[in-house]
Image (cartoon, rainbow, N blue to C red):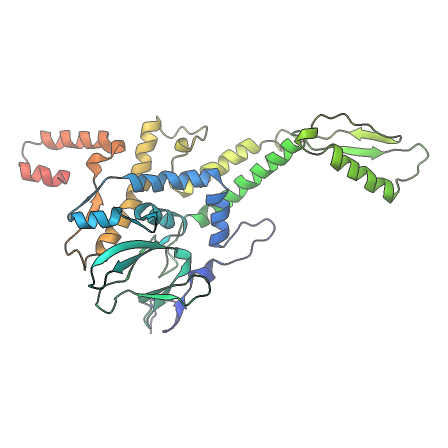
Length: 367
């Protein structure tokens, strides 16, 4: 039998196990938790890139065929803003899970985004997903059926495309991990250089006239005095008093070794590229791909924000169809400031087409 999934019946397909990996010297973190800490929590470029997309999706004007559906999507659930939370999870993890909460009468009353790293997919013998298990800590996992007892779904699974996985999507963190590691390492290196007066510390050369060697006790005392009195930014430029037989041999890095500014800029551009954000919008120098800031902002909306928003809103509309038959929620492109110029040109072209009826013009413009 040809299998659609990657497992036998009754077993779970765990994304956490696939993403878990070592982090040795010269490598970057492979697990999702470590990548989130390094990228989103500790890297300003990655965090700003994610925020630009997420906040754009969350602030986009929405329109819905049913006001109740629009209110449900905009409502805060557990303090979270649904659209922003789901957008961030899709960018970082590649998967987002929206739990559908109902009242005793079966009416849909709340939408809540679950932490994606806590969710595993349960598939049938053919590999088709039948449920999702949500585990917090060591407690009993909550089983959310794709088709509940009443035939309605209990969870909506939104995912990005993954060419090598049937059940889980692919986020941007893995692709950005290498650039994030380089950017963070360059930041730490530059900080260490500043702590040491922006140059290597040099070397103390012991050159007694009689050829005697320095004793271990003298060496340890000298090293302790150097660390206590001359290390750190507060001691930069402090004069050094040398004992007999000691001379200072200055050392320096070459200009190529000191070019960590260029290294950080290249890594920052790769990070922005991984999240689909034009580098100009993050303040990176040397980006001439766009004529001006307005064009870069338009590219952000066209290439990053709109695709994510349409995937989220389309998935939610499909998931709640059992409660809102024929209901749909979408972006109101006519109210997006970044796209106003394009919409005006489209309105002018359609309005000038005299061979079209008013109804055909409205259909083309989506009004």
